[in-house]
Amino acid sequence: MPNTVLVTREPPIAVVQLNRPDVLNALNEEVLGELVTALGTLDDDGEIRCIVLTGNERAFAAGADIKQNFVTATPVTMLAQDLTARWEAIRRVKTPIVAAVSGFALGGGCELAMTCDIIVASETAKFGQPEINLGIIPGAGGTQRLTRAVGKWVANEMILTGRFVGAQEAKSIGLVAQVYPAASWLQDAKTLARTIAEKAPVAARLATEAVDLAWNSTLDAGLEFERKAFYLLFATEDKKEGVDAFVNKRKPTFKGK
Ligand code: CO8
Image (cartoon, rainbow, N blue to C red; front, side, top):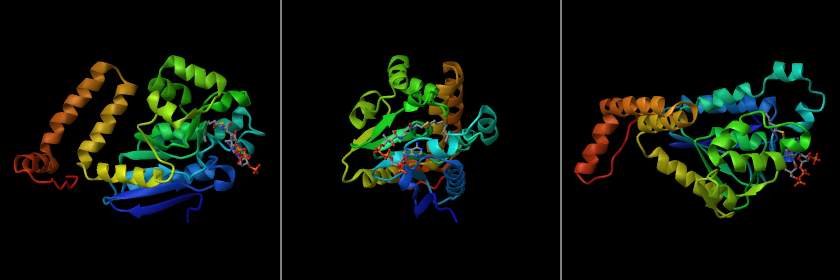
């Protein structure tokens, strides 16, 4: 049974909570393994249409577990352990994932949030890539995803100083979609997830894949994918349902077919 990651199914959404509060949810092999398993199981669960990934009020995750993973690490042990290989499995989850951040999202924690499809934050959230203070650099996508999100100049300033960026600033630089009150951040994130879960699941999946391509490919390749995905959706029952609901002035019910 997992214990460093807690899963709560509330169909059509599920909440996945990192659960190492004593170390501010520092990421070690066990957490990442359980996280990948939990997300994979939910991704195969036909009743779950949106996942909220979260921590606790004090921390989403304060990065890699420095004490466990870095003290005696050598390039060879880092390569053998290859923690960041888990990132690929997380990135490939098809169900939309909302990262709900309260408190610290630092280093690998910020990078984990950036693998998600949407980041929302409590007003208490603090994002940062402080690896420079350890004499290293971000190693799980920070130099790439942060730069694509906020641009070269802000990314370099954050990465070279290691400073923490508050929730409002994170929103203003495009890292965060919504900032919620500290009293209701998780409920608000779940409400967002339920809104997404009501939409057509196949369209949602193709939309996030297409948006990811805007990062990972050329404009031409992205547009080509978008066009084909758009045409493909005309074969779905959910497209018939959505259009019929509009024409007949009723609320659609999507089946993911
Ligand atoms: N690793 C291990 N333990 C941690 C970590 C961490 N990243 N962060 C906090 N803790 C522990 C502290 O050691 C402390 O434990 P103890 O009570 O036993 O001393 C406990 O959590 C509470 O922390 P603090 O007492 O330090 O709490 P403060 O409120 O004073 O400070 C901070 C909070 C500012 C978040 C501070 O803890 C801090 O600076 N933490 C480290 C942040 C950091 O540098 N993160 C980047 C790590 S490097 C990284 O993530 C690279 C990722 C590359 C790949 C990822 C693959 C997994």
